[in-house]
Length: 109
Ligand SMILES: [Cu+2]
Image (cartoon, rainbow, N blue to C red; front, side, top):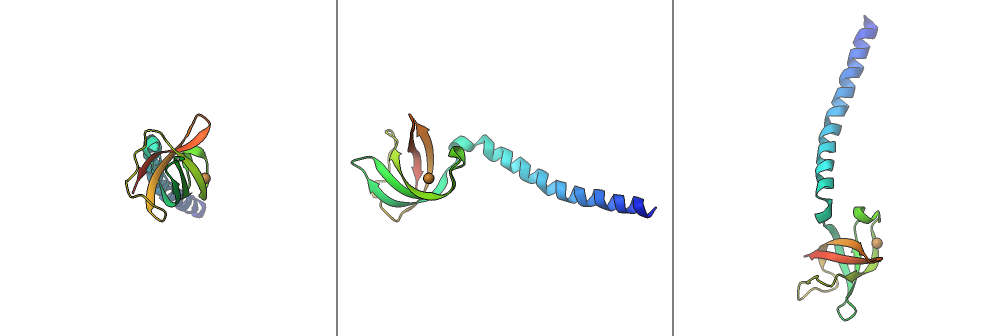
């Protein structure tokens, strides 16, 4: 009898854990679905428009398996930047590997 109540409690506790986990899993699946458009927070550290290069302090780039860090990227050929973009600006970016190089393919401020 006591064991049965204990088992029931464990089952309820597991259910309580499982429910939020399931909800979270659903959200995560949704973000996976839209991963191609996902923008990552970043801060502009340097901008070289002649060389089409940008140095960013970027958040985790999940699509590249890269943790947060500061590094320089190419600016993708088609990418149009805000005219007055400058060092210190907070932006959101999408970085992709194009022809073996890492390039910013989307940037919003
Ligand atoms: Cu990086």
